Amino acid sequence: MTKQEAADRVRELTEILTRLAHEYYDLDAPTVEDYEYDTLMRELRQLESDFPELLEPDSPSQRVQGTASGKFEKVTHAVQMASLQDVFSFEQVDAFLQRVQETVTHPTFTVEPKIDGLSVSLEYENGILTRGSTRGDGFIGENVTANLKTIRSIPLKLKNAPPVLEVRGEVYMPRASFERLSAQQEAAGEELFKNPRNAAAGSLRQKNAAVTAQRRLDIFVFNLQRIEGETLLAHSETIDRLNALGFPTIPYTKCSADINEIRAAIEKIGAQRGDLPFDIDGVVVKVDSLEQRNQLGATAKYPKWAVAYKFPPEEKVTKLRSIEIQVGRTGVLTPVAVFDPISLAGTSVSRAVLHNQQFITEKDIRVGDMIRVRKAGDIIPEVLASESHAPDSLPYQIPDRCPVCGAPAEKDGEEAAVRCFNPACPAQIFRTIVHFASKGAMNIDGLGPAIVQQLLDQKFIQSPADLYTLTKEQLLSLEGFKEKSAENLLRAIEASKSQPLDRVIAALG
Ligand SMILES: [Zn+2]
Image (cartoon, rainbow, N blue to C red; front, top):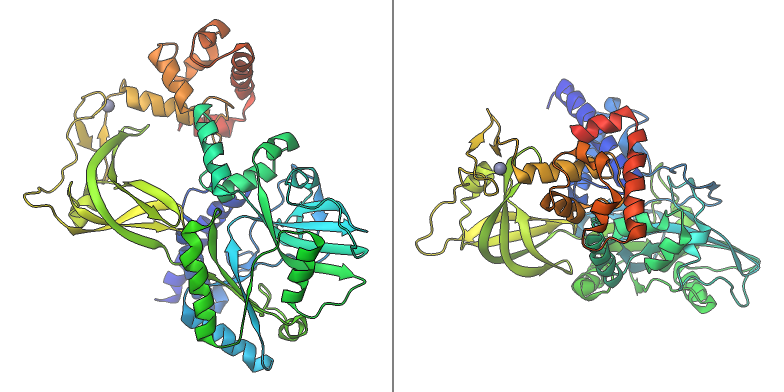
């Protein structure tokens, strides 16, 4: 790669990663899977290390991601809440063990599951919880004390506590809570959170603590940030002490510097992964001795005494039962694989997007095939390959008619996609209105897909503009609407009139 090519790619990656980070951290609405984000970030870091002159001080690789949102009071952390360096193979874990041993002698390590949640700090004075905050960018977070106090496993008062104590924990949403919340949101026609972590983040940053309380979050405390009046020598000792004080603490295994021992501990956690009642996205390996941690120090970005091993995506083979066609808001026909349910990374999966005809043809995916499915980053499942065809199967062809309105579906110029060009296609009108009302567009609270469908079925609306002439009587005639909910929705529709122009353009785009 020439320097010019590298410079172009660095600029491109910087743009993409900045946008993705904003969606992920500030909007709680990621548009790509974690694994994809990590891959792009790794590519950027590699280029910056190959061509150091291309490294800009404001590169996305140079910041601990996430900024305070302005909704809550800011908190400057007394002790930085650093992020850990990610590694993706046992070779990289071994390299870390070697690096540590170049600086300190006979280190011991702890191996802990990495909870997939949101990092917070809890501060206690004379045993009373005085403040709780999010990590933010690692230096400045948000004061979410009232919301954290709704988490029942967080002690509000400690017995025999030191005068000053600050701990760090990971707030998460147990899978059962996430499933219950998703069911409620679906019934209410609200937009669903993409995964338990985003749900935890969204729930913790609620203005109304009563909402947070309903979300049934939980926490694991995994680090002592600071303590006065006591001297503790090892991380494992601090965790035991915090546990004795009443905190739910992270389980850990102590290991020597032998890679085989550490690998076994990592694999043991990996094997339990699907059975845990919460999501983990990796395993953290840390030097146990606090004195040795000080000796090791940190780079500009990460402590040198720990790494986070990230699990690779999980893959399984299953039978492809059918291919459904979804019609999008711009009329694009998207094929979706429907297969026998398989359990991947702890969740049941039975559908995956097949993108377009080219994707299907290249992999020669046919109905009845045994297909290999991967769930990357524990988020979006994807079909990797066809393993075998059923006898007498035929290559799959996307239908040449829109399955919803029956209009001819055609290729749009050079695009890979096939579209329904009928402007009156009900599927397109439906998706246009759902998009119009969504969070990123006009943000009409309470107007989700289920309600849009009812309004269309009743012929109360045919375009986004019709939303503004809806009456309370019309809403009350719909299933599930009462006086209060009808008034709330009308108010939300009215409020959307004051959205700034760029939102309106996005909504109609
Ligand atoms: Zn159509």
